[in-house]
Image (cartoon, rainbow, N blue to C red):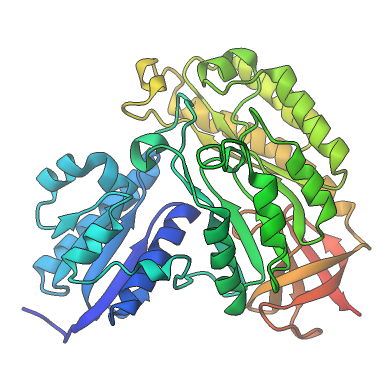
Length: 437
């Protein structure tokens, strides 16, 4: 028996996983709104008649969260709290037959590239004229900006190509149109995302064309920061750094997941590079853009990783002094090349190795932040929490990097605005400051 009145034309979209999923949900919501649906993102009201869950299927923890969410809403449907539940995204793409068998009460499962079919099921039209338009789930002053879909890289541990398909670049024209639409609606920062930014353009322009795209995007009026996420090290197009130096609104920031450093691990991971090439690349990037902030991501406990491999990684992290760093425990994923290997590093060892890397990085981050004291930075303010306005410098991306905190009792800023801030004190990952003219 239903316990509340459901709004028949109201859709609640739930997003799990990465920033690429966020963009997909925003596009879906834009299409639904154009078809006269009332749509909300992760509504707390539970008064929607339709729930769409955009799932993640990347690693074990993410898959479990997606499954738990599907079961929660399947149970809500049984209890009459929602009328229809649909599942889309990576988990649905990867495990659709299993999900249909195990959780048959869901009204439909859809893959990562089946938006038109999902809309048709909802008796909505896919509106081609809405290319580039979407309903933002982030604060309006920044937006994740997906420049391509899928991946052609052969990395042994990664299931993304199984879920997202092969690499497809969007055209420069479409991306500029999207950027202009976002800027018109208040977006000041574009965070470029893709499974591999550096592959951009090879399919449609027959060359790596990220630098050309950046030039066009940096010309869009109203866009004050452009940030680069997820660059692959092998074949990195160095002309991107030239554009970064030339254009003031391209942040001196590069997110480049390196995954490991020892030659045997890089070879087994099928990364297409070596330890020395990786060291040389980081050095060359820093030489070309001296004040660049480099973020990287590593994997702990990949099959066959020895204590010697781990110690070599620790030494490299200590020596390289990345500005930002994250590390994940290896997850043994079906149908990947690495799944043929024995997952022979115990979970406890994986976790201990990851903690050891982060202990070193915490010290590095603290040291680097101490050097910022007394300096003035341009800060974009994202939110107000408790006693503080919280923002970021050009060297920091939301959710994953350092934050700048300014006391609300002393200074006032508007969320979404830039201000100059003098850093007065610093911790491992937080900077404290005050506004200056």
